[in-house]
Length: 411
Image 1 (cartoon, rainbow, N blue to C red):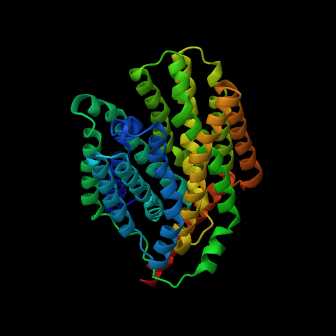
Image 2: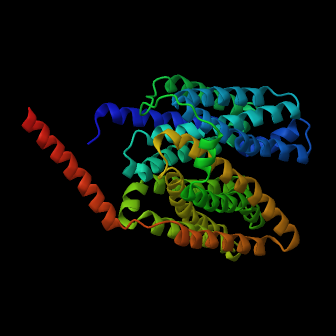
Image 3: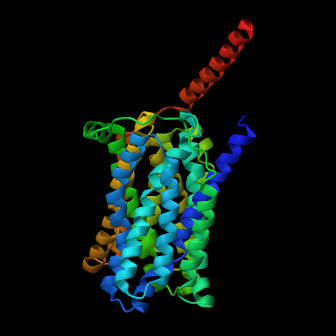
């Protein structure tokens, strides 16, 4: 059983994580219209929105490499929160679209520190509880994002364009204050690392495989949930309130399933659970064109959210599962930089398909890609059966009891 001190650090870190993502998502629903409000064109609005993903891809591998080289995670968590506050304030005070572009790029650098967040949090748990750790931190992440996006439009309606940015900055400041109490994980010595270490980590087979699968997952999510599913909802008659409901049913199940991921992973095994989760999400995307009412669309999105909520934390855990502790931030940097390709490529592909063959067929093609990802999981990811995991856990318990027995005899 975990000590109260350790439990406190886990809860504290979850709170810091939720505030971190809340600070960056309060303004997401209004960002593109805000750029137009500043006098920017639609193309400029697209550049501002996309700058977030580009800077993430640039920073994550160097940041992970540096974190491993220094043997520290906590300083990067603090830096990430500082950048979050700066980007939110800068966006709120912006007078020109170019200023918004710069500060949105800064938000991408802040999001790049997510590498350190995930690696530090998993260090609080034994290796056999990595899936549970990822589930907990993804729950905190999703709840922060969900509450933020729900409040963003309301804040703008009541208090003006700047309100979502200033509220986000305030949340970031609270998270920054709390982050100084965050406990650094396992003590790791600073070490001399060079490009050969970078190549060694980047060529790790399981890391590469789960990164490719994550690209497909992110492409599917950003093309549908964060991209063109709301567009389809509008074609069914959805207004602002209905789109808020759609966002909620697409996010809340993700948070809930992430919270219970540890027991599910122990019972069914990572490969089986991941395959089923990806298949469920892909199927939910494929049937979007068959929905003729908003109620049916809400149902498909809720079911798809269950699959997405289970799949992503498992992939995150697998990306560092076979990597030594001293290289984990580098590995996570690789994973997160590679999957960021899907965040850009997915919406671009869906837009192209929408213009050429129509959104209805586009959803079907994207869903097929998701099913392909499920097949890759079955082919690439080794399965540790629940029975084998149970035996491993028993051996660990027996080993601890034996050590305690020997220690008592020596006393």
